[in-house]
Image 1 (tube, one colour):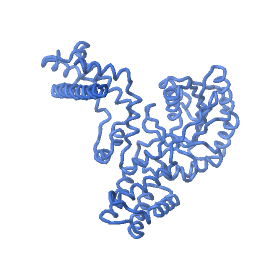
Image 2 (cartoon, helix red, strand yellow):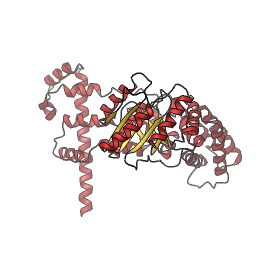
Image 3 (cartoon, one colour):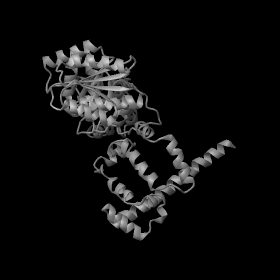
Image 4 (spheres, helix red, strand yellow):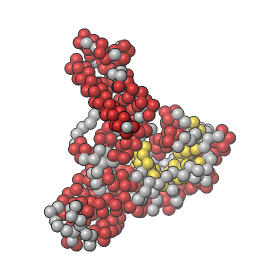
Length: 439
């Protein structure tokens, strides 16, 4: 996402390179290019014009410090204005009442049902909520079964009335059921249509009136670009929703919806979603998204993803093993599984400042770990526990058992040793620092 926009903006800022100061002339030239880049990214025309006008007003008359160049100052101004345009700060989801009812709305194909499951996983793992997923799409074939399967995957409770064709009545019964059973979060997945129609809007308005949700979210497919903004406006006029969810951000999207939607409907983007895995749901942070648009990476989100997956107790145990030279292939395998849970590898690499641009045209295989996992699982339990046992004969057997070449096994053994040495060095340095502090 945003790759083309990032490149175009970078080229725009180059207009100011070599300039000694910011003037009305060079700002106008730069912003003309910025506006064109935004329009090409499918940003709403009025939003793009208003944005560049605000940037121009902020930029002209700025004193350029000797420590920075005009192009750097312009990047800072554009960054701050982009973050403000997308909402300024992250907006939290309202789950205070018990049970908190969250109503999910949107067109068919926008990813509502998948998002409902991801939100259930988010509320369960990050907010400590007991969640009930409710199927109120009585029209789409297999919609109820899809939500049932998702509820099993994320390990939350599921509610449906397959003989009942009245979604308002189902939603009311589900809330009563949640009150009796002690659930403190109810997610109501509603029906969508291929286009907005009166029947759909009347139905979802009736559900909202009946269950009085603490939060109504509008789910939109970000790949639909400017159409997503127009649809959001129509839904908001009827539903007055509380926030927007942008899905399919891993697709070939130009990013216009993310930039425009807040300005058009005056409602915050609360979540962004990419991929199918339950973990691929993120709270929307405007400043971090501005960082990514301007090619600055998103190291904070990367660290947070790592912290979510890496258990502190387990980390201490691994440190102790490293100090005793006991780090083995079982530990190595666990580390791989934790990295995989963090999400799409290319997206993760793209969060590292300056690296994202370098890998944008590189095909990073999402199955890159498969051969490594096959090799490790072809070892005997004793070999995984004691890697030093793995001689050439054992390597040949492991290669044959994993369907790989002996060279791949040798390469993994070398990587494992290098990783173990590097991690041990880092652990020892940290230990030395702690000892020095105590003195």
